[in-house]
Length: 218
Image (cartoon, rainbow, N blue to C red; front, top):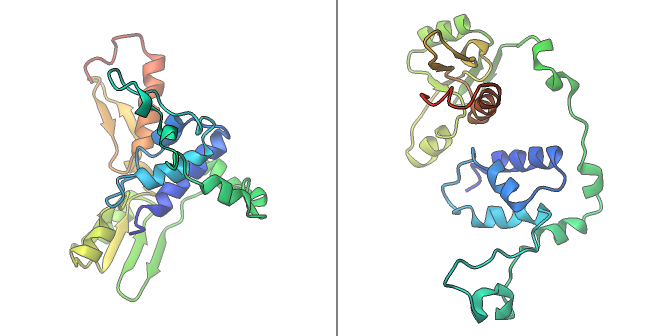
């Protein structure tokens, strides 16, 4: 249906920017935070894995399934890998698009002052406040406004459930809701606008910094 496509593309793009030769497992892991309700992920993974360094390797059959049919290539006309990579290689502009310039301001988000945003459309007005006080004032002015962070559900609700949200308030730019810390009792405090990837990286860092067993109570 296309709802997940932008997120899928950006996840794959960021993965390739960090690692030009990812494995198929790396690519699968990069899509952990992306939800697709239509495809079962198979065509998405077939396309994305054409960028994997081990894309031509077929996984070994599990115990008990060895035999003549264990190798997919033995079926003759079976297509093991998708042709996305070969198609892209024929596009002359691909090489120029592989490393587009990255906005310098985004490299150091702390150096840029957040700017509140309002976008007025025909049916929806979108607010992106830059501080918690403004967000609370907007919510008081528009009690029925929809608060969104990842915003994965609104598109489904409006298209298939016919819900209407004339006012939407994004919490993505609120520093007060993006805090991660441990309180005095040792409990993990997660802000309401913290992304799953940010939480994952934070916990991985804490696990490396703390002695074994120190976070067993989480």
